[in-house]
Image (cartoon, rainbow, N blue to C red):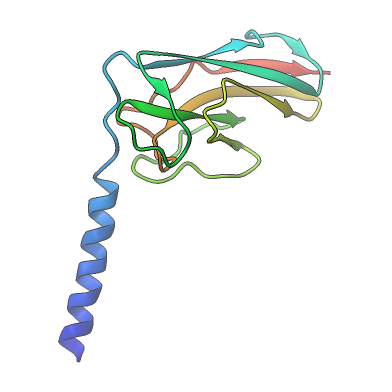
Length: 140
């Protein structure tokens, strides 16, 4: 019984490692950008953020079509989500798994940073990550 449990634990560990090692390769030349608002803009608390992509297509979460992904807006995030693991879903990591090209978001007054990151069908960052330039906005 101990041997079976040890083998089961080892198999689980190896499966976990293989999942981490299987990040989706980023298509050559794939880029993502924030179209608006502009870096340094003063914006209202609720604003429409517009996204753009190049050399990759958008597809809803769960769609495994090759060379596709969907947007995640990172708000005030200093460190990108870990490679090989799903992008968190919280107040700082907004998911747009419907292949949206824009989203209305609400921010608290003050200075904030915004950045886009594309995730694959399972919300896992591409390898290498496909991220936009980080912009700073001032919220009234």
